[in-house]
Length: 121
Image 1 (cartoon, rainbow, N blue to C red):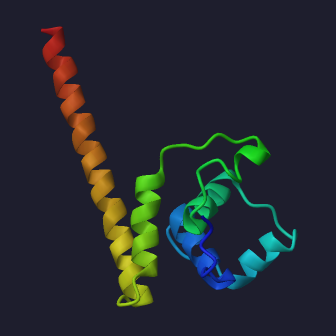
Image 2 (image 1 turned 30 degrees about the vertical axis):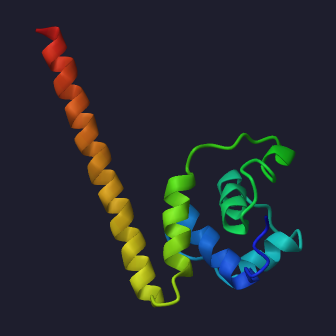
Image 3 (image 1 turned 180 degrees about the vertical axis):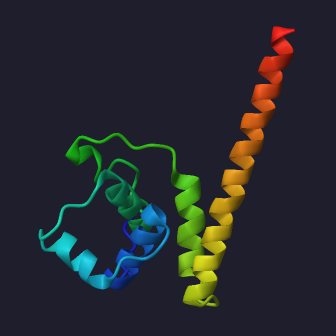
């Protein structure tokens, strides 16, 4: 189901957060919608999540296969849609979220390296 309440401004901001960690301006969405600029695969996948359509609805038409990044995007989208948070709060939360995910990734890599090392003994 498409979220009809999403404005061009919201769409641009949320796609920007999902793809690059900071919002795009409304003119970016206008350029996409008017054919003045092509969207990247990542931007299209983010748009699918934000608009609430099934993964692949837009991307498969362009020859792309959906990936499993929905969890990250849903956290970011939820933060961006929270009416009680200001723009700086949203940016800070998303930055912290990505930093925590990176710390977790590094920890898991360390654990895997320890396991490989133990297996060689």
